Image 1 (cartoon, rainbow, N blue to C red):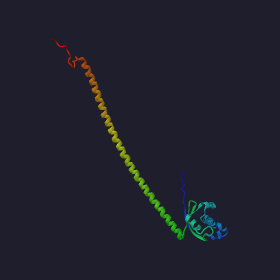
Image 2: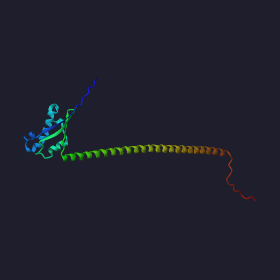
Image 3: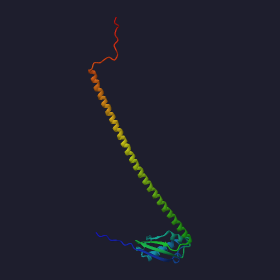
Image 4: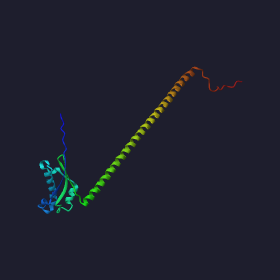
Length: 196
């Protein structure tokens, strides 16, 4: 069976999307929503998204914030965006940031950078802990081996001592039997009546 390679086409384009003509025809309290929908419809048409599916267009959070910056009733009349199409999904980013959004983006990038550094430090500490744990495990293994050797030596000593005691007991038994054969001599002299 031959495998077919799927080519991942990456298309990048910049557009200035007119919004006023579309959001002017809806009620004031729906204008920002209509502006977002207009961006999606525009990109579906111009980036040739299959089936004209609006769900395949992903809007960046900074672009969304730029639309909603002045409230729901007063979105911008036009906006410059950068569209990137990969695997049938279109990602849309804002090109020209306002001062407020630039500051916010820089702040979030710094926060992400700090989080990555903290993650790297944490991983390094975990690796050090793993190394120290491995070293302590090895030391414990060595100690257990040494204690096992000492215990074996003690058992051997105990076994030799027991064997020696058993030998002493057998020797004592043999001596006991040998003594029975001999005539016993009294330990004390017998008391005799005085002779006159």
